[in-house]
Amino acid sequence: MGEEKLTERQKRFIDYYIETGNSSEACRRAGYKGNNLNRIGSENLIKLDSIIKKRLEAKQSERIASQDEVLMYLTSVMRGQEKDTFDLDASLQDRTKAAELLGKRWGTFIDKKEVSGGAIVQLVDNIADDEDDN
Image (tube, rainbow, N blue to C red):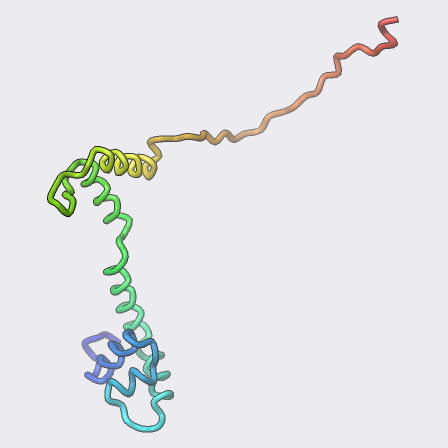
């Protein structure tokens, strides 16, 4: 079911459910009547599940920066394109930190090298016995 096929009451239910997280309360606010709002709410959750999930994902992406957004921001700071609250250029320290974070992301600065493969260890007993010395 697409959002364009929803009744006005269903649209309001979705909005109120996202706001409150409570299906019975969402039913009441959306204008459903009766003593069985709990059942209606459960039915709506099942019927409207995919639309509710899409709306929640959209809200989440509005609130949390994506990886690309973070990388673009760090790049603009590093290049001196971002201004601070006083409309001044980012400090050299801030630009260096942004470059460092980008470098870590792209593996530019490798502190450790991982070595893999097999090696054969051979122990050689070449210490003379005390008895052989006599």
